[in-house]
Length: 422
Image (cartoon, rainbow, N blue to C red; front, side, top):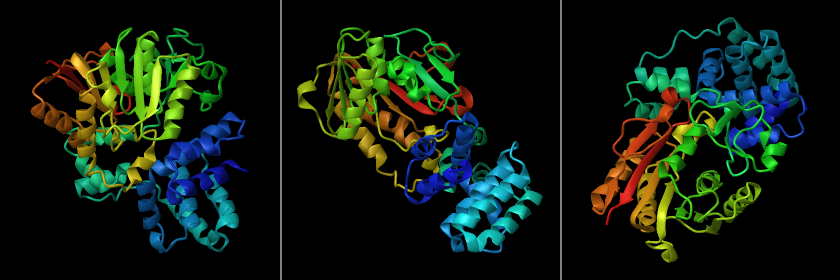
């Protein structure tokens, strides 16, 4: 199967079968050997999902037929074709148009003339100058974000830079397993954290080093909650929302695989992932169980030195790697209540003097500062603690830090550190 056809079928799964874009890419790359094809397929899938709203705006400007009247495959072929014409400098215009028509021959035969005409129009008029004049609509169309998302992020005076950075093609980042090694060949060292690095391969999870447990795939920002928590050897630690285990195994590495970590997740198959990752990385201090973090695990009451609550969230900070989050229509209004409940339950595991890190991969204040402030207001025996991070990411803080992609060149992340004082 040719690269564009693989990308088309993957996009169908993302837009019409609710498949996550990263899983669609992973499945589309199965069996591909040529590196250039792998990169092109991934770029077509991620790029078309990332810029869907902008692509649809361009299509509407160059078509007499409304989007809602087009068949699914016609719309997908047009989106993919317009993405190649407007966003990929290395794809010749003739190839973008002609290969799209070939796809139409197989998936939308009756509309191949229409697809050809629209894409040729776009090729002649691909420089967009007539953006909406309203600021929110302008940012929405230019950077391909839903208007409600833009409105929420518009509270930042750097909103446009933030949107631009959320559209970046992320580097593949790994965390070296310090229990097994301190560095790896063919890894570009990160300036942000000594045990983080960047790799070019899309298939690193199939590598010998990965299978030997020498590293795990994780963005630098996702490493910071554990560094902020700073678990030590022989401590009792709890990770209340642990799957797939990236932060849990990081805790074990900092603890030198000495002590005890209780790791929970609500889904059995995700608990299996935690155990699998721990086994692969040579870690044996993690006890993973199926448990709902909105409930209290009685055996651990007041037993823990450190607790990590990396709670479910809207995920806005990780859009660069999972652009389908933009088009997720889930109602997130109930999330802060769930997050506060998890935080309250997690705090009950701490001994006096114990510390807890609350973290999210979102940038919405109602899921971040508002949740933490509400908790502190209602629990007088807890106090915010200053967070210490590696110097390139360190900020002056009184207990919480937000990493913004446009400043940190990482995913967006929120971290708060809380201590039980009495």
